[in-house]
Structure formats: structure tokens, C-alpha cells
Image (cartoon, rainbow, N blue to C red; front, side, top):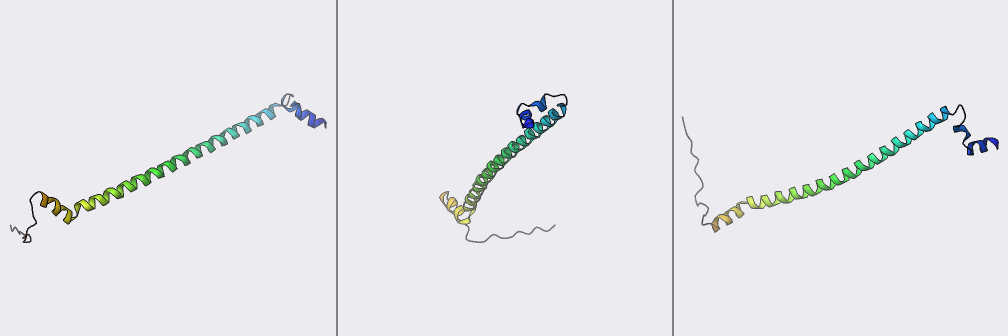
Length: 102
């Protein structure tokens, strides 16, 4: 009972040999602070990774839609349709290959 009352009165921190106890308390406090900081840092990184994944998905969807639009624009039928509006028509004869000899 006496040791329990001594613990409650915090005698172990005010006696002559209490420097060992203070060192241990400071050490454990620093470990606790480092652990808390590490946990917060990990959470911050997890949130950042999550937001970057969302941004990657958005950019990927934009890329796919742009590529699809470009493919539709480059189709021969679409090009001939646009050129017909401007008065140009496809040739009836295929192109002739020109060979240059030196």
C-alpha cells in the first residue's frame, strides 16, 4: 500500500535518483511524438495518393475521349464530307507513282 501511495504522490519523480525516471519519461515522450508524426505523415500521403489517382482517372478519360474524337475527324468519310462542302471531290482515277532515276 505504501508503494501505491508513493506512486500516486509521484515520489519517483522528485527523489534524488529520479533523473533516471525523467530520462525514461522524456525518451518515451519523444517516441510517442515520433509515432504520432509518422501516423499523420502516412495519412497525408495516403490522401495525396488518392487525389492523384482520381486526377489520373480524369485525365485518362479526357485522353480517351480526345483520341476518339480525333479518330472520327480523321476518318476518310468525314474528310471527304468536309471537302465536298468546300467544293472538292475525290479523284476518279487513283494516283500514279512517279519514279525518279538519277
